[in-house]
Amino acid sequence: MATSNRIAEIAAAVGEPARAAMLAALMDGRALTATELAEVAAITAQTASGHLARLATVGLISAEKQGRHRYHRLASAEVARMIESVMQIAGGVTLARPLPRTGPRDAALRQARTCYDHLAGALGVSIADALRASGAVEIEGDAAALSKAGRAQMQALGILQFGADPRGTRPVCRPCLDWSERRPHLAGALGAAICAHALDQAWVRRRPGTRALEITPAGRIGFRQAFGVEMRAG
Amino acid sequence: MATSNRIAEIAAAVGEPARAAMLAALMDGRALTATELAEVAAITAQTASGHLARLATVGLISAEKQGRHRYHRLASAEVARMIESVMQIAGGVTLARPLPRTGPRDAALRQARTCYDHLAGALGVSIADALRASGAVEIEGDAAALSKAGRAQMQALGILQFGADPRGTRPVCRPCLDWSERRPHLAGALGAAICAHALDQAWVRRRPGTRALEITPAGRIGFRQAFGVEMRAG
DNA sequence: GCGATGCTTCGGTGAAAGCCGAAGCATTCG
DNA sequence: CGAATGCTTCGGCTTTCACCGAAGCATCGC
Image (tube, rainbow over all chains, first blue to last red; front, side, top):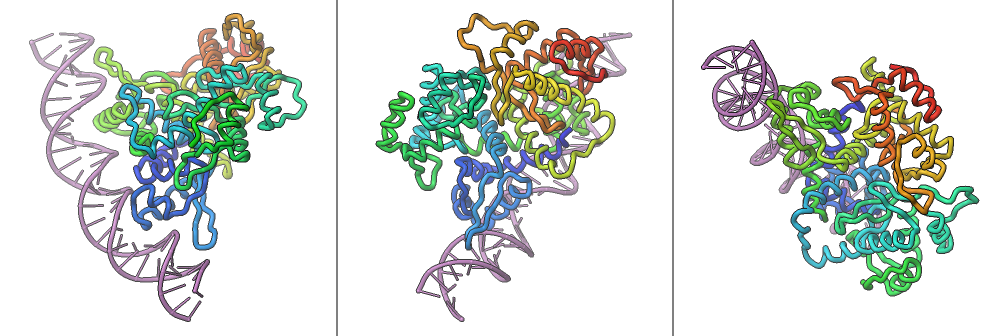
């Protein structure tokens, strides 16, 4: 039964506030040091060390030593997807009472952030909406597809490269329910490519210490021209 | 941050062997009684009752009273997907050492089973393979799409009904990594429709007490004619 | 080198939670 | 109406584990 013990082991590793906070912090795909992670979890370094060891043992994170720092990151995209799916349920229940909007730090996160390897927040959802409206992608429930026109658009923008493909569609995207917006944004290969492109073109900049992204002036122009999306800068 | 406390709460609910076993048992989408669930978890009824209460509190299962029985089921497809993603990691690590194949009970599960609302096991993977080979669906990483030809085939088989749709493709499927086969099978709306069709046509029958499915003689014929898949009966 | 920084290991404490036996409600069946 | 069945609540036992202070290694900067 895929040994339900092993299932419990993995879930238990996530099922502790400090470890959950660390994993959530790692959800932007970057690698953080043990001290940074201790801070986000509001615990001492010793305690964090123990937690990180446990997360590594069950295979949720991997570490890399660099000088006197140890950088920890999520072990794989599968892990990110697993945490994402937990977050979805974590947010979903709150649907009745509107999400508590806590402070300006949260506002930045809601505006734009990374979700492992793709864009999320208002920015991510707006892009998904725009691509949907133009017929570039279709989203239905937990499935999504890039249309022939969408493919051409992505190639023209230099976001995706395709070899000669006889078929018009390729399955490159996957919807991902945004926990702050409650609407889907784009994940999968396409989502990752858009995010990489945006970072590459300096349309967005990572804010140090959070998963929040800053939309640059160039980004305002870029997102408008590429997707027809109007975003506030900042 | 979607309150990482809530994330931990949900994960912790899954992160206990008895509860994980119960949830895994519920992964076939059916509703089971407290006593049945106590049995699969190898605990007494009292203990199971406590666990079920906790799972209900965090919103992972919902219960329905019927006479002197209480039927418990997964609260939603989102929950099923979350557990599925944990199972994926639970299986994935074992990639190095080949999965321990434990006993004949397991063999039935490997052959054919339900995964919440779609088919899994050798049967599910074979169907996905066949549809991929014929160009009906394409699967790439964590994304999948039904092609125009595939759509026609599914309509002809009476598996899917589409309204008049100007575009050739609709995003109706989603790959789901099979933990026993380590290859993707089909989930999403298409996966659910195929499963419903197979049950409806009596191509498969649910085995009482497990998630395993029995392939009927009619099923052997049906799966061959519909998908070109050759399965052993039983 | 020597001190500072980053991280881990060790030991002890306290709280949380899993487990079962026993007992208590409901519902159903004879 | 009892007796049986399905399930829950209560009480007490035991284990697990999160936490921090103190101490121990490495690595870096001066």
